[in-house]
Structures are given as structure tokens and as C-alpha cells.
Amino acid sequence: MMVIVSGVRYAYPSRRALGEVSLAFERGVHTAVTGTNGSGKSTLLALVAGVLRPQSGSVTLTTSRRPAFVIQHTRTSEILPCTVRQTVEMGRWPHRSWLLPLGPRNRRIARDAMERLGISDLADRQLAGLSGGQRQRALIAQGLAQESDILILDEPTAGLDTAAHRLIRLAVDEELLRGVTVIESSHSPEDIERADRVVTLEGGLVISDTGSVPRPAISATLTS
Image 1 (tube, rainbow, N blue to C red):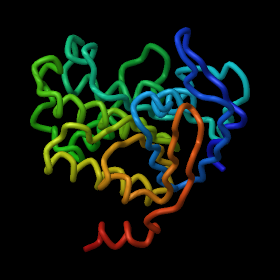
Image 2 (cartoon, rainbow, N blue to C red):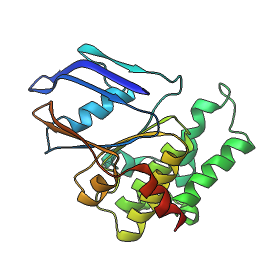
Image 3 (cartoon, helix red, strand yellow):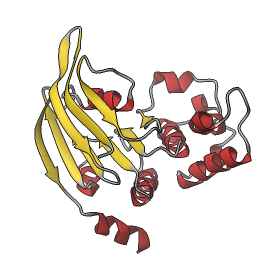
Image 4 (cartoon, rainbow, N blue to C red):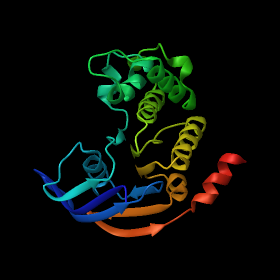
């Protein structure tokens, strides 16, 4: 198992977010986490990513690499004084020596991530001057550039056009084929159907945990 969530509880001051959730996520498996707004999806992802700490229970990762956590573009991403290139290169920061600039290899990996998401032509544009969909692709490229063993995506295709949606789905499928564990929250039936496994939350509890599309179907899609 790549991630083990054991008896995790988490509450905000005004409400319970998760109530004793236990799940395990295997290497190379794509899990879609679904549920209505407020069901606990984003909280679960933030706990696995290490952004939040469980108030009880535990989250155990069997890899030393920090998970790549891609949130939806927010008001903060609209005002960041960064270019697309700088934003994507942040994904390489965990791999550089302390206080040293990025070397040629790290810059190449960041360029490759931009190419995969179709934003190479936006590299020198300010993030604040882009559309919401373009900013979202830049944030996902940053996650890909991190080259983590675990990729966590919070509604990555929400509000994107068909072309951008396809680029993101292809990039995710490529990560799965190299053995990355993908955990994705989504309301999109198309995205959910592509997952190997679907976990449904309601009121902070797991109410369903089922399988979906087998991995050979994804492989066939990429090679067709």
C-alpha cells in the first residue's frame, strides 16, 4: 500500500468534516473520491497530502517523497506575481540543493510538464493574466513536475474546455502507467468512470467503495 488512512477524524470549528475514515490506496491505482459539497472530499485529500493533520487516527505514507497536491485555482493563484514557468518550476524545489538555483535537469522536467499540458507558449505569461482554465493547467503541470509517487488532484478538470480536459486526462493516465498513485476528487461522471476505484463520502463517512475501469483499458486508450 502506498497510503494508509486509519481511523481518521477531523472537524472544523463549525462542523465535522471526517468521522473515523479508514482507507488504503495502492501503488499505480487511480481512486476517484466523490460526494456532495461538504461531504469531506477536500479534507480527506488535504490530510493525505499532509496539509492537515488528523485530530485522531493516522495517515501513513510508504514513500519518502512528498505527495504532489494540486488544488483548484483560487483567488490566491490569480494574484501571485509569478510566470507560468516559475509556477511549474516550483514543483522541482524539493529536488534542488538548498538555496541553489534549479539546474538544467530540473528545468527540463518543468518544460516537459508544460508541454504535456499544452502551456509551453504561456511560459513567460504572468499567472494572474491567464484564464481560470490556463491557471489550472499550470498548477497541474507543477504537480507533474514534482515527480512524486502520489498525485492528489482536487477537481482538476472543473470548468475546463474539452481540449484541456483531454490533455489532463492523458497526463494522468501516463502517471498511472509509471506506477503513480492518483487520488482525485471529482463531480464529473466522465472522470469518475475512468478511475480504477470510486470512494463515495457522505457526511464525512465512507458510504461506498467500489471498483471501476481496469488498467488495461487505460493502456489501450493511450496506444490507440
